[in-house]
Length: 461
Image (tube, rainbow, N blue to C red; front, side, top):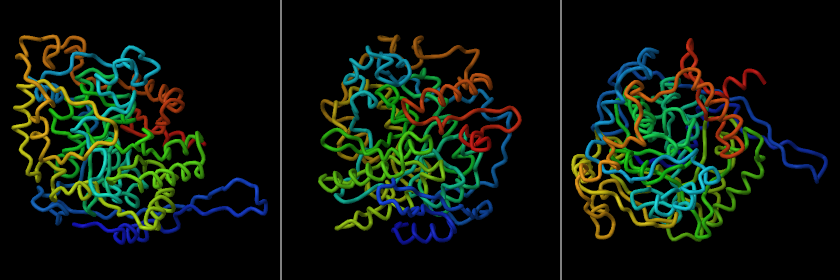
């Protein structure tokens, strides 16, 4: 299905009555620009099992999702998912300290070799970072599904714990044609700072949640905070998940709207708009299209997108073309789900079992990488080199790495309730300053399952 901005606009009209950013008028011409939020009204349809699907050939829509606390995440499934890494020779370096350059000078010094996005913006050929066609914006939003999600997106990077919290919202998105990708389970910790098993758990539980709710398995992911290196890439690819990042200008500035800073008062709405307007100025000079970082967990960021960023892009001269990421990548319908993708995952896993990833260093502004060409690109001269068998270098094997695996007594690597709450508090106090993603941290409460820290705080304010 080809999504035009008309369909997006109609969705906004149908689902967002009374919502919007209204500029507050002041008699003082020197007064700062202020905005008032309208009250959202969200309508979510009920889709029965077996309802007509937006993706040709997809499995039937499952019945309504029923949350069972004993199953999320409290089963030994991570041990099974770890088998997807068997025979995969991972990079020899271990986790970073906390995903930031400042906390890990040694890793930062080796950022180019690691392919570390957070320190230097390094990407690889396997990363999707832009759209091939000039003037095209692959629209995506991180951190849903949330109660404001359905009015704003073309591509959804979903947090697994929010999927089981808001399954009907995700079904609404999927059934109305929006794409769905993995964006970790908790969003509470940078992936490069995790062990192999923790990374597998974060990706695997989200993948399972999406499959249980929608009946399809995503083939793409985006790391929280954009924090990825070659170890995280190799694990993601071995699990059938191709990384989607966002674009950077030739100057190295990433296309980040900073909308995530607004809910925590780390920046203003107007300052975020200025950042976005500059992004469009730079995008107009690119030879390719682009992908931007935006979020839809919060009412304010959704309203900013509906009332400014989308309209601003459409009102440019010439206007930018807004598309789903699969559309802007020229993928065939269904390529973003394993059940409908024509990409054969078996050769990819066979490739990983024989070869060590040695992807070339590239600046942020890469060419796009179609999913079906991933294996061919990895086989290109200079991209990878044959390595000895896993047994010849057991210290770097996914199956035998003692520095990056966890105790068998905790196969799921999912924090306990106390640890989860502690992570949430740390995220509020630390990540808000460093990364602006405190509002994305998740905590697990014994009686109510997974809820957003920002949601709890909103009830207290």
